[in-house]
Structure formats: structure tokens, C-alpha cells
Length: 444
Figure 1 (cartoon, rainbow, N blue to C red):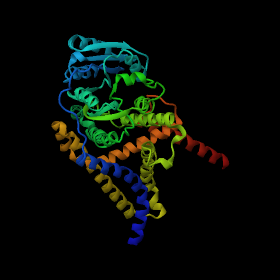
Figure 2: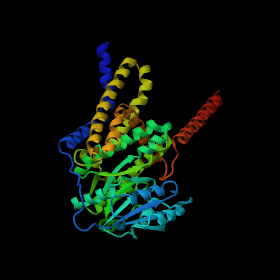
Figure 3: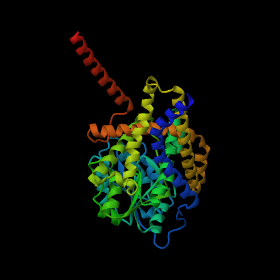
Figure 4: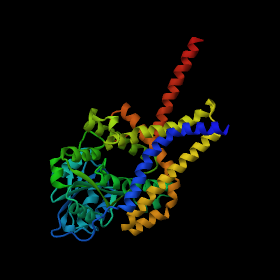
């Protein structure tokens, strides 16, 4: 009896061990690199001439956040007289222009410019790129704020790494906004750790190997000369940040790097509904960009040679395995599987993912050493390693739905949230049941 149970558990657990392995290997590798061969982050003053930079901020109904965003630029350690800020408005319908004008009168040391562009973030950025000046162009969202040293650090990283044509900063949820919303605190804290792991455990190793898949659309930087040679942001995809990453790599033959100590704080997602829409959009953008750049060149035989193949397998196939594993459990008992076996399988997989979370958390603390207060905040929430496996599973489900919807619906920035999509599914099921009952009654 016990022997049969373990055989069944081993057979079924294989379905989840496969995705776990795809996550375990990068976590172990990142832990080794970060603890024994850490990246040397440039510090200190820039040698010689301080370069001029242009910051591009796409504006769409940003009245509530724009002032804090602009103030974070003005309060940064980079000299204000060397910063040109272009706010590219794409059909805002609120008081964003009035907020900009007030900031313009108060932040006199900053060169602030307002441009009107067509609808869409990519079109707004493209309009602003042509008006940019200086050595480097930095894009950032209007609903986030800079860590005071972020601009200086990202410029220092460009100087230290002349081979890098573009960089992405580290994105973290704003911890002060997390405290202000107790209703979603657990979601926000897990999102904070998710971002910290993605950038300070994942992209740190990807950057060493020149395998960064996508720059953050919220905060990225470019050598202006390289950006002007690109095909600009793609207006036909919801993944314009991923598309630009691929342009740098394939069209410009350049390198995309991570600047781990350039932090940009973003607003936490407003609950599961916003996360559902956001992650679906990211997934759809990834599919569109890979389809455009890689086409028929993706081959399973290249899994150990081509990091894009591995990334797609993890983001698509592996996510499917996770979701299938959970929902299949609901029908396993009627097929003769022991409930005890299922419980042991869940416990075993949870322990494995707990180990992965602990490794990643260690990586995060290691990299946050440059900012003690942020490191202390992360350390004080060590218990998140026990909740992040469940959170990641929910995100995997969202990604799977993103793949499915990408095949069924045209691309657009706005999509049904979790509640609305659930309601739509119920309506379809009710309609189908009515049809079945109608045909049954007709046959009788």
C-alpha cells in the first residue's frame, strides 16, 4: 500500500518537478554568482565631463502621480542643469498639463518640456526621442519615483561598460505606498519580493551572460546615438519595451545590461484584477515580439544553446504544467489516486519551491547591501518566502490565460480583468448548458 502510494506520488510529482527544475537551476546559479563572483557596481564621481541626459516621460492621465515623479528627478544627485525632461502627452483627459505647469514654475533648475503626441505610449516616446539631446536618453513612467542616486548610478554604469548600448534599472514596489493600503498588503508585499527577485536574482545573471530578455518599460536608459539608429518603439505591439530590447540586440548588435543600484519605485498593483490585466499584457507582448524577431527559427534542439528557447519554455510550457497539475488534482481521487498521496505531493513540491524562494531571497539581500534601508525592509519581511510560492502559482495562471487570450483575441492595451473575464466565462457556460438542455428536451 505504502509502496504504491509513493510510486503514484513520484509519477504525478514529475509533472511539477519539471517546472521546478527550470526554476531551481537559475536560482542556484544566481546564488553562486552573487555570493562568490558578485558584480562590481561602479561607485564614486564620474571622471571628467558630466554628460547631459534627457528623460522621457510618457503622460496619460497622470495628474495624481506626475508631480512626485518630477520632484524625484529634481531631488536626485545628478546635477539638475544637465537634465532635460520631456513630458510626452498622449491624449490625457485629466489635469496633467496643469500639474506639469505648476512643477515647471517650482522646479526652476530643471529644463522641463511638454510635447503633445498621438494616442499610445510608444507613439509618445517616439515623438519625444526626436526632441532629445545629450549623451544618454532615459525613459521612465509617470507613476513612479527615482531613488536619489539612480540617475548618477546608471550614467556611471554606462561609463564603466562602454559595450552596453542600453540598460534597465531595478524596479521595486514603493514601500511607502504598500503601507498606505492595508487591504492589499499581502499582495503588495509579494509583488515587492517578486520584483526584487526578478531583477536582483534573475536579471543580474542574465546581464552577465548578455541574456536580458526585456528591459523594464518603467525605467530604461540608452546611449542616444544607439537609440537614434534604432527603428524606434514599435507601435503595433503591447510589448514595445521587449521589442526595443530585441532591436538593440539584433539590429544594433549591442548589449543590454542591468544597473542593479539604479532603483525606480513603482506603484503597487491595485489588487488581483490589475495584476491579471498587467501580466496578460506582458505575456502577449512577449509572444508578439518573439514571433516578429524569431519567426520559424525557434527550434527545441537549441534549448541549451539559445536562451530565448529556454525562456519561452519556462514562460509558456512550464506555466501550463503548473496550472494543469493543480486542476488535474480535482479529478485524481475518482481515478483511484490516494488523497494522502496528493497531500504528500503538494507538501514535497511546496518544500522545493520554498528552497528556491530562500535562495532568491538571499540573492536579493546580497545585492541590496548598497542601500541598507532597503535591505532592512526586505529582511524584515523574510516570511514572504513562505507565501511567494503560492503567489507565483497565481501569476503562472495569469500568464497561461495571457497565452490563451493572445491566440483568441486581437492585441490591445486594455483587456478584461479577472472579475469581468470570470463573468464572461460563466455566461458562455450558461449559454452552452441551455443549448444542451434544449437539444435533450427536443430529443425527448
